[in-house]
Image 1 (cartoon, rainbow, N blue to C red):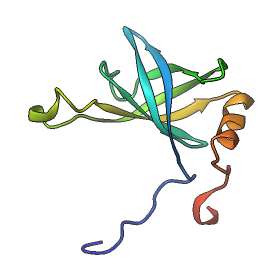
Image 2 (cartoon, rainbow, N blue to C red; image 1 turned 135 degrees about the vertical axis):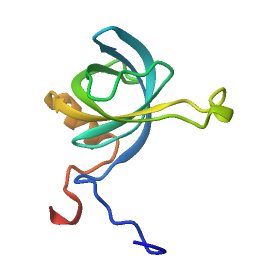
Image 3 (tube, rainbow, N blue to C red; image 1 turned 180 degrees about the vertical axis):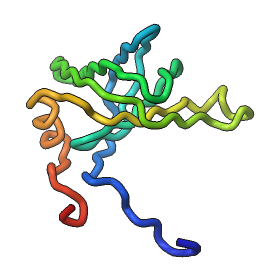
Length: 120
């Protein structure tokens, strides 16, 4: 759509939160921050990036000490322009493959109703 609003392609609403996390994947791992989450995906800021298509194990560390683990697939990577890489953290978009009930309870706690966008 040129000059118009971009159509929402996400199936579920997202909640913007900053939650400490750690990721592990075949051949690597690192700590990072979840910057937004939904019922079927997350956006994670981190210095080391798994390859697109990788399956990762993600552990969220909540302020109250609770840890929630999910498995996810890396569906996109966004890096900053080379001139900004020293100050802008890369971002990975993850699609949830499996999550315990505690993850969905977390969504309710951070204020995101688990509902589909536009009734899809």
